[in-house]
Amino acid sequence: MASMNENYETQLNKKHEYLCELLSPYYQNDVAVFKSSPSGYRMRAEFRVWHEGVDLFHIMFDKGTKEKYRVDNLPAAYPLINSAMEVIIPLLKDNQTLRKKLFQIDYLATTSNEILISLIYHKALNEEWEEEAKVLKNLLSAKLNTSLNLIGRAKKQKIVLNQDYVTERLTVFNKAYSFVQVENSFTQPNALINQHMIEWSIEQLRDVEGDLLELYCGAGNFSVPLSGYCSKVLATEISKTSVNAAQVNIRDNHVENLTIARLSSEEFVEAFKGLRTFRRLEGINLNDYQFSSVLVDPPRAGLDEQTIKLIAQFNYVLYISCNPLTLAQNLKDLNKTHKVEKLALFDQFPFTPHIETGVLLAKR
Ligand SMILES: C[S@@+](CC[C@H](N)C(=O)[O-])C[C@H]1O[C@@H](n2cnc3c(N)ncnc32)[C@H](O)[C@@H]1O
Image 1 (cartoon, rainbow, N blue to C red):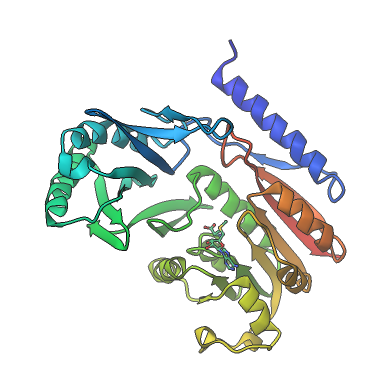
Image 2 (tube, protein in one colour):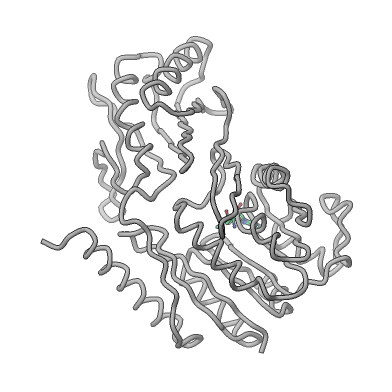
């Protein structure tokens, strides 16, 4: 029987071949491939909860058949998540207040041994729930020997025991950074791969002169470390929660040349063209920037037409993509003005069809 490592290499080779074939109209040179750990790599995981008489367990759904299946242990999940999954079930099972109408449990962990657990309900949460949840939180913290945060969610309700975020600590080219990661907002799921993605991005842009623009910046995952290698950085993002987290990350990492504004990429296009003014851009003068490069890390849908037109003006485009199909579509347009110089495959989700790609494009 093939070992897990052999299987890991096989699935990675398949992704590599697929990506090379898909992007062959734009790039035929070597692809940098970044391997993940085959298991224990997922820093966040969400499960539905199944009630069966007195029993209670985590479930997931098969993507093909849509059938539910029981999950007592998820090999892909970070070990702290697996320990929490194991410990929480017996504590919930015998507690009617905590288990009644509980339908989902989300976990968010960090490599710095913090964990946040969200219990999501189809019922209003009352004081009795809060009292029981406090006891649960203390029991879990003691059993897992970790700093633990617990959140109760229901329709229009969010009860936070301690805090609704964790702080991830990543080392990028020997420099330590802290990143506040807020519950229910986007964070890169694979911490090791994320570290590779940030370092690879720095390598592509470190010798480029001029200022950097980042669209879809989340909580500053790329822009905070990249700011150390650029003169000035302006970053934009649509989510208020992520922008607020980004402001904390700028402060905590003592970054002084990075400004973050809450704008969608579509809104930024309008602001950049001078078609609209935004109160959210107050105090930011776009003419103060001499942008030479742009980093985009859009959602699975890829870039819209107007954003493509905007970024086609920059000398360098660094495109981080979580969907090779929309990336290929966008490259069809960008290829008219830019040439793909570098390509990287980041194995963010081993043993799944997902492929994370990095592309450096330079103006023709
Ligand atoms: C794949 S995530 C990348 C986030 C960040 N680069 C990171 O590494 O954590 C995509 C981000 O785009 C944001 N987003 C989605 N639609 C957007 C839009 N139209 N304009 C700007 N940001 C958007 C999401 O809130 C999310 O934070």
